[in-house]
Length: 167
Image 1 (cartoon, rainbow, N blue to C red):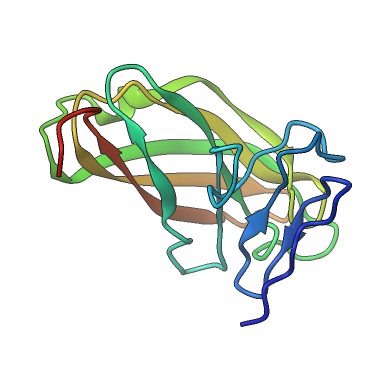
Image 2 (cartoon, rainbow, N blue to C red; image 1 turned 90 degrees about the horizontal axis):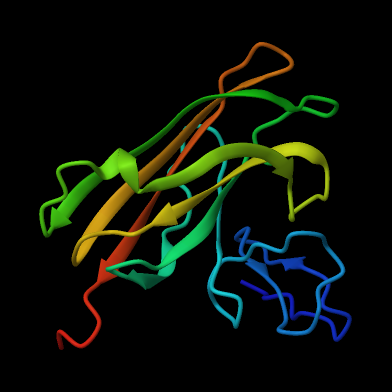
């Protein structure tokens, strides 16, 4: 893999694995979201149809931390096709501390947004996720409807931890 380094202008760049990196400088893109390998600690799930997207990291802190999670469908959509509606935003605990209401961890409303990978409006869906009760591993899924009638979906995993709890 050849990783694309981020420029000093703050523009987002994509590696050959679909990982998006953003500098801590003011980004050129609006509403910057980013797979957490740098300072902004927001997340993007990017993947092809029928595949689980990259797992999101680092873990979020239990007890109130929330972060925007973006599901980027740009690798799944044909040219000229955009997401027209959001069918479902789902969350489930895979393992760890119990969470009786994992879908309640989605905060606010989901929105159709521009992709950071290709910059095209309507290629991604974003929503805040967090306020988790303990140390768990969550499966997050977004299902949408596109302008060509297709139903793209992406799923990813995100861990949470209890601050100060130790290893």
